[in-house]
Length: 367
Image (tube, rainbow, N blue to C red):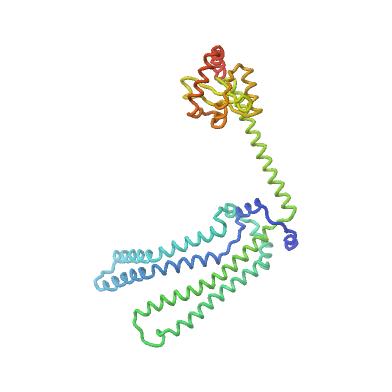
């Protein structure tokens, strides 16, 4: 039945389907890649810090062995020696631990595109279903994973075998050597073994990641019906967002139109733009934009202004700049202070009765 469903999934996944898969944690991830990058980071750090680490361990060992005869053993000295040992070992291991943790984080980030997968942290109850678990045991994915695990076992065995053949040919096993040579031999043997193992696991990690990528891509394929449903849902969301934006715009326009009757003046283009301004001495530090609009909405502002007797002044350059730079509810740009002050001065002289009535209108609006 599952194979039939997979056969019907012939369509590439949509953007929404892919983003939901990332949130669920359904992405191509290879544990072998984490192991390889962590091992490479550890080997790289050891290559740079091995000499310093060896010197510090040697100095600590010399200080311990040279002071055995004169050291009194009790609880205090034991605690002190253990603390010093932990400090020396911690300094030696800290760079390796930091490098491996950093490599693991980078590996995981590379595989999931450095994106958060919050839904992946939740409990997957379907994973506890015995029937699903039985199906996974005999699935193609399990067989491929078993093959990859077998390849890892062979890689480790081959690295050990090749290393052993090379190591036993060393003069250490056939002739007397200096004691210092033992340390160099152990270092060189370890690096050689880890390098062989790293290259072998890198090939396996590439195969594993390629398989996980292919498997995830197949799992995310969609049927034609699923693609249609996803597109309908996406278009429905876009339509709803568009409707909400239109509703918000109408609400803002309604608020602006209701504020026009309390304006001091409406500056027009005369047909393309209209901007209503208000200025109350002692309250506003500069004229405030109450409403602005272009084309049809500008005509509505002018109509309400005419209905309530609000002075309308035609000034094309000032109207254009006010419409472009002015923000509703905020003071006008400082560049327009002088021009607007001249307009208000003319309006105050020619419409004294209106401003007497405007004070009462504003008082009614705040009551």
